[in-house]
Figure 1 (cartoon, one colour):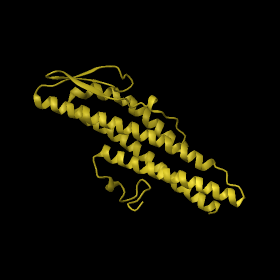
Figure 2 (cartoon, rainbow, N blue to C red):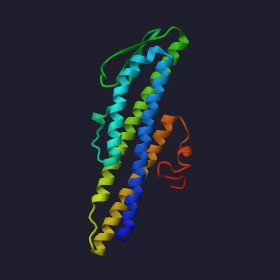
Figure 3 (cartoon, rainbow, N blue to C red):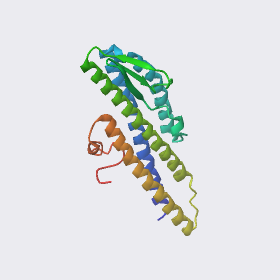
Figure 4 (cartoon, rainbow, N blue to C red):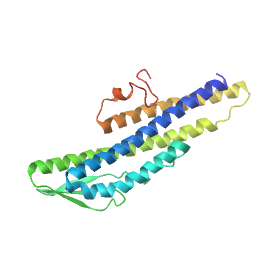
Length: 211
């Protein structure tokens, strides 16, 4: 395989990377919209929403930067999406921690009825699931960024043997990038509550139903 074939792999992987980062940006924006809608309809959630908004704004800015540079240093230990925990502290109160930039701050959500307490638990559960999915997705995106950097900076010499070796190496990186992209699409679908197949139909993330 010549340098042109390798360049095609790099371009294809980079296009998928850009689409995946765009998908993550959309997922974060959808979380923001969901919080805004819930806090507007129920004042019990306003403090939680206000705590998460700065985190969302900072995260979107980081993702936009990562999209343009595809250089992003990330580790689970430094993930902004903490682990949300909650528990009933009384028959009508749920205590929540792990939110925003103050993960140890405790939020108290008070219910007026049994149906309200169940609704609050569902809200917190969905929020915790969204945080977990976003954290997992960003870990994958960081790995994709590393792969993009390795694929673009790999030197292709005029030696046929080295050209073949580099192409095989980049093909492996491309296949790993493709696998990660498919995992990310699954996380995006989970966050949006839609079938995974629906995100493959128009190839909006650079991966089609036959990939």
